[in-house]
Length: 156
Image 1 (cartoon, rainbow, N blue to C red):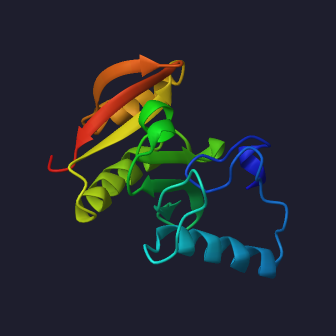
Image 2 (cartoon, rainbow, N blue to C red; image 1 turned 180 degrees about the horizontal axis):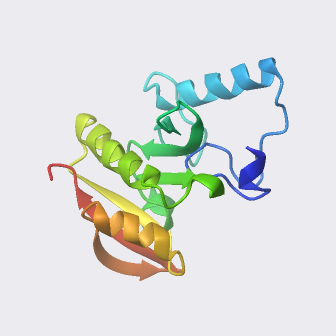
């Protein structure tokens, strides 16, 4: 977690004003409960949020290298600048295929949820993530507030 630095950890469920500070066993269990509740349709999401499934990205040695979030629907904010899927890979594990493999699995999971096409949004200057999205079939649609918006059909 420390390798990600002090900013948001995309795909993890930790946001800029909600970064992990409790690395105790109890804190970890609280984190897991929040992530599980976020995906449960019987648990209403907090105001401004939608249901979301969270996944860990692990390498061949089962070492955690990143996170992926799959939002079950889009609200106005997500439609404009965040999308259905967000992911992050820790710096030491980047450029090794983890993000591409995770995104392909995320698209498959979206299809299982009945989502026909997923939206991904990426900062205009994030060339690595743009390449991942395009490699996974992302089709550029538009740019809103500096975020490039791509759609991927889940049946591809």
